[in-house]
Image (cartoon, rainbow, N blue to C red; front, top):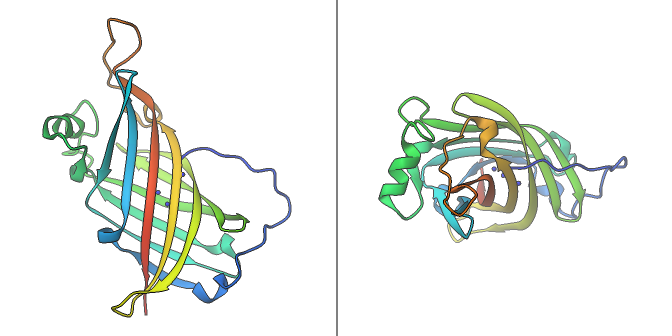
Length: 199
């Protein structure tokens, strides 16, 4: 769900909806064990550091006939951040960054959904971090649907977006002797989403 960036579209005519999508209309719960909420930050201006959140919950309402009626909701436990380094994770949880003791969750609530044609969609909503709410737009690709061996009806999406963390009050940084800053302001967001249809 790009679950962020600001993209614009000049479309004035509704895009065609993928065939068969109407049959998928319904309510879905995001499956954390088969979903990844990831991010990438530039470190020391020379390399990328990747991370993800391990504890989250979310729901989707899909309207295959009229995608503009689709919605998404996501709640992320900030203490579940994982970058592969306990020291770095501890710093990210501290008052320099996410202040997880004071702000334990990050939330996303959709406000608009669009079909762009083919399997491409766009969802816009309110992203709240550190008590600050700003709009976020995510570009999504529909990966299809399937029934798993346990009888669950699943849908899958891949998403991507970019944000400037400073817009949410995440401003901590350190200057490099060679020029530039230790941590990039621009953060790339990546989503691989699997959701199970509810009865």
